[in-house]
Length: 402
Ligand SMILES: Nc1ncnc2c1ncn2[C@@H]1O[C@H](COP(=O)(O)OS(=O)(=O)O)[C@@H](OP(=O)(O)O)[C@H]1O
Image (tube, rainbow, N blue to C red):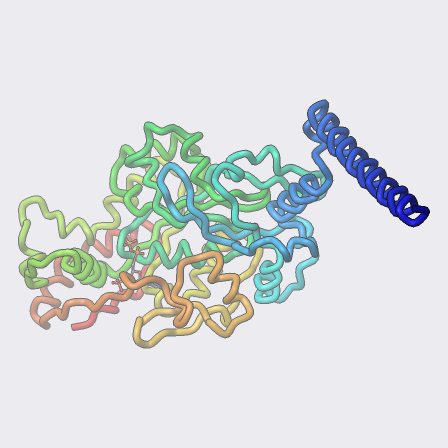
């Protein structure tokens, strides 16, 4: 009798404690919810911490807890064009503390790259501000690579993108040719986020081909820096030919292709760079326009990148050990053994085994018979002279394979 009463009291007390515990927990949750409804910025601490972490990583702040978040620096898909965009960036603070060795500078950037951002997060840059790190948001380009197609524009853009102070959309946005009616705000939103210290560069090689797009560029920003890259016209013809016929079942010989449209001279226009650059000079002061040669970049990208770096007023960040010559491709690729390579993989689209740009670069060129080559040289020589006179420098153009 005594025993069963004790058990009953004990069970009763246990049940009461459980009840009190549940009531306390519920009221705590209600209290938190009530606080949140009164002021949504006061989110429960776990949510708040997560948002803090996400913002910190978006702004490039190093934070130990971030290692638990998925790492996805680099490519992300963007609405609108459904394009893959890559970006590089550095924080202002990290720039100040960087050692003078440029390769260290670049590899140090690994730690401060952005996290993957969904387009909606990226397009709400105001929410990413903080007192300690610079604001990162999509910004309009201050430099454009406007031409010419098949002249190494992709390689140049890629090499420039790995500079820690440069960001660039991977796709050709064709804003000044095809999408102009979408307006500058649309154009801005296509850009990867950047800090105020970083430079956004966009490349679309067809911009140089029409006066209309050049005028639009001038209306957009008369101070924008313009980069034009040209190539030995005969090699460009070979490259264009390889490009055209890689997409077609019909094959025509190189010679026939050249002579196919003698009236509208459309193929001939591939060799007449001066005609287009003259239009650029009509709108922009010469010191705002840089003309480079693909052939120089193919032989050795470093001096070309240094020239571009100085023109764009970027701090020195390129070094020889970043690149290695790939014999089978015939041009320089990223050095897969360099400290920088993991970062390159996050920022740009390259083959992770070879460090080279995609499969459509480095196609086999059609051979040119000796006589036909002499004929081409005759036709093209005055065009080249016209170009060299116009831009005030000469290029070593004798790259063609016979
Ligand atoms: N380092 C490096 N990496 C990759 N590609 C390089 C490089 N240097 C020069 N090139 C040459 O660039 C040629 C393609 O030029 P574009 O990128 O302007 O072509 S496109 O108009 O965007 O299709 C392409 O020409 P082809 O070889 O004739 O296909 C490349 O050879």
